Picture (tube, one colour):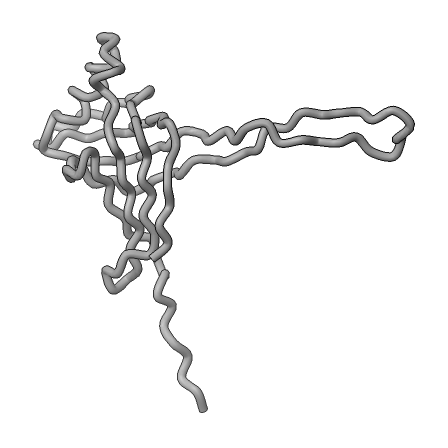
Length: 147
């Protein structure tokens, strides 16, 4: 009787680095939605369908939720955007997904990323860490390395 192999991806484990610096730990990461924008072309005499030609790919934002850190660096990064310094606020953001043994499964690398949303925490008197409810960032393209 064959013994079933354990599921190597039983739960997602991931790490987020901003410019190769580990700033915080998050319990959720929503990777971007991808959608191909199309242009509809109606051909004369062709009444059964219309042509849909690809125009561009729209890649959505990335959301990090339920984070905790002892550093104010991510909030400072968001304040840099609030002050209008987008050019100097762009960063390389990397999300690495690991299996249960700690082996990387996939690495998402986002170019020229900057935060567009910050949701603050609920403050608690018994906690001395800085919590981040949600940090959302946009980017100018990405690569995926499937290990």
